[in-house]
Length: 201
Image (cartoon, rainbow, N blue to C red; front, side, top):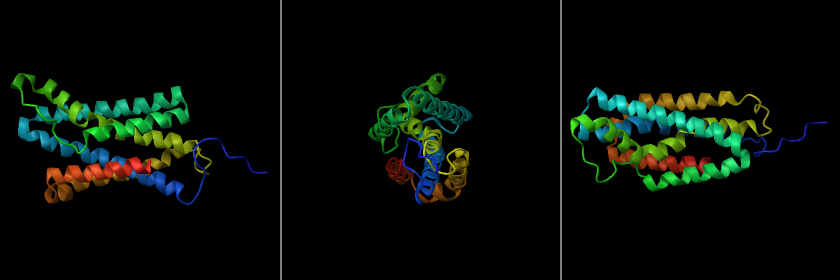
């Protein structure tokens, strides 16, 4: 007699695996496209000094780790169903910050204060969307593991879609996206991609 389905998210069907993998791909693409896009927006204010790039990298890496920590703790402490409700709110909250742009009223400070100013600007302008997207990969893996799909016992293969999305974003931004689209258009396309990600999740 076959095992009864495990309680959790919907069971296996022809669309479950492609949907999970496609959503992982899209989230990674958005994550890695946002970083150079917003840094390009800030460069005219502060210049292309190494401190600008290094500070942006530190911010994005710290926010990525915060997203992973949120994904881990929220499922562990709240359980699957309550966590999905929380994450729905986390996904909707960044819509108030879209489309991505430099927050209004932020004027470049004296050179000695550029790093704290830039960290605050990054947090204000892109902190919410980046945090929400950064939590997607570990959460989708956890959710997939709770289905009764035959591959649910080892969901880490889904990182293949995530790795492909990040690689394509990193390769396409300098050779396709940046030369073809202005920053305003990039921001609008990113917003459309985020809306698609929310719908897929």
